[in-house]
Amino acid sequence: MEEIQKTEVTTNPETEDVIELTKQSVEACDEQQKQQAQEDGEKRDEDEDELRKLLLSDIGELPLIPPSATQINFVSYFITDFTKSGHDQYIYRHANGLCVIGLAPTHIAFKDEGGITNVDFNVGKSDRSVLKVSGKRKKNALRSEPNTALCKVSTAKDTYIVRCCVKGSLLEVNERLIMQPELLNSSADREGYIAIIMPTRPADWTKNKESLITLEEYKEKKEKVQSAETLEPCML
Image 1 (spheres, helix red, strand yellow):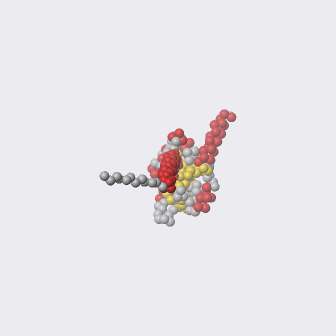
Image 2: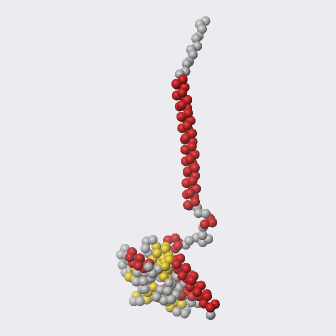
Image 3: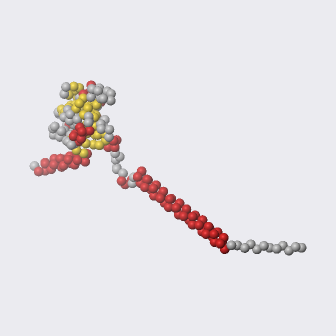
């Protein structure tokens, strides 16, 4: 029986070193990938938290009353004591330049008993309610100056002239007020607006703006007036 000779396999030390270095390199690469994946995951979590904070406000920071559509879409301006004491009006300016004109909450007409009972757009030399503007060129639009009369509002006590407040083109008046003047008493800043005017040129608005005050300035001014009126009887 022939003896089977076993062949010894000899290993090269250099080959073993290469194999070991390769293993270490692979392990190091795997570790780097794991670390990078962990860092990417943490960064993604941070980004999601930041986005969540932007989209979902802290409930403690939310206003008790949500802002109205007017507050969101318009910038509020006011003019007080315009031509006469107590003739306060608002100008809500949209981003497209259109200006909505109406009576401010402190207008003197609201102080009369029973509020406003009649609205008449037949002032000056024309009836503002019959103006029909058409086309891109706003054909038939009335050219207005700040002191141009828009309408007359009447109470049981007196009649007051409402004015344009800005220079531009009168595009429309709120005809609903003719049949429903009570809208001025209940929602003068919404359904009870008076008219819509488009300043003719940017320069016209810039000049108009100089005579207007912001909502914050309006509140501050009226609070001072109210405080002074409250103190007067005490000083008598």
